[in-house]
Figure 1: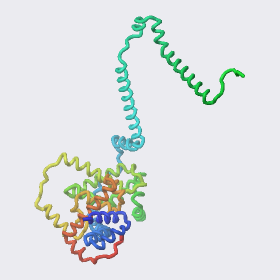
Figure 2: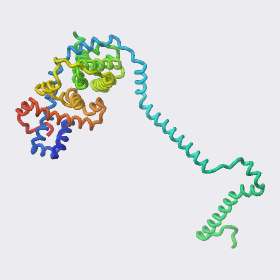
Figure 3: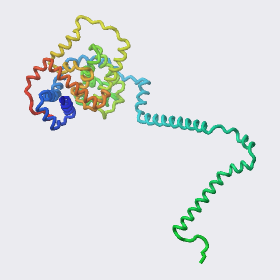
Figure 4: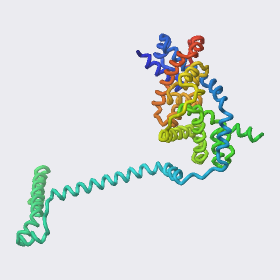
Amino acid sequence: MFCTVYKWLISQAADSGKPVSGFVKNHIHRCDSCREFAQLCESLKPKFAQDKQAILKNYDEALSKKIISALPKERAPISSRQRSAGKLLARKPVLIPSLAAAFLVVVISIGVIFIAVHRSRDMGSFGHPSEWVSAASPEVLLVKAESPLETEYQELKKNLDATTKFLRSYLDFHIGPQTE
Amino acid sequence: MDRSLTVKHLSDEELASRVAAGSFSLFEELVSRYSARLFHFLRHRTETDQDIEDMVQDTFLKAFRSIDRFNPEWKFSTWLYTIAGRSAISRHRSNKKMKTNPTITSSIPGPEEIVIQKQESQNIWELASLLPEKEYEALWLRYAEDMSIKEISKVTKKKPVSVRVLLYRARLNLAKKIDQSAFSKKFAGTPVKHKLSFL
């Protein structure tokens, strides 16, 4: 059952030229099938090299002559299409990051527009400022305009008082003119 | 005479660089070195020898036209085999479009006869040619061209691990073919080695 794994490891060893590990060696000594496979892997290289010469002999001359006679005497210029394809491939390292950056910009722009459209919908319609200016008295408008500032001021004052009280009690020193 | 001797001693990469520089006649040396090898590499792609020869010719024409794009830092064989693979694919696509019924003459042996002939052959490449196309090509690149796994993966446009799997399957299937053929007697006759090189 594990012979498939062992054969794979033997094949790997034949490719890398490195020796197989100890447990594979032990298995090869025990298993006939794997030993035969290891022997085959071993014998393939010299056998293929030897037989290659025999099969190449049959074709070499005639085919080479035929191809050489069909070759143009001068090198034809590369067609504009091939040239542009070549240039594009040569620029590939620059082209790919540029395309990625362009794609990112487009995605971000679409996202910003999408968010802006949604926000404006959520805020509702206000109409022209002159309409609500005329609808309210100047005093009311002044109070409305000043109220956030007033609230902020009160808040700051409260915080400052609290901080001063805390520091006085914690550090036990007196701020202001000496009473002694 | 001297010139031909010098040319014979030049590496493929040097020859290609010189062709790119303008010595077009040196391309003939590359053709004579690679035509038969490409023929055997592509023999699985089509049915007739004529088609294979056409594919080999296409490959050399393309290589000749684009030789100035060849990078001498890489092996010339890897570059040429990549072109061969691509042109075989494009030719296969165009053939598919205009496929007609081939006329079979009685002088051409049938597929069964070819298989028997190959099985009885004593040449291991003939036996390997009975394997599926991809497996045969991987074996050719590995053993005939002595390419590394990385180079084969570049030519075949496969991941290195896929090439390893392909070679593993090819070896397993070849072992089965050897068992079925006249080769098995030859292999059976060889004494069992107790010490293998990778053990």
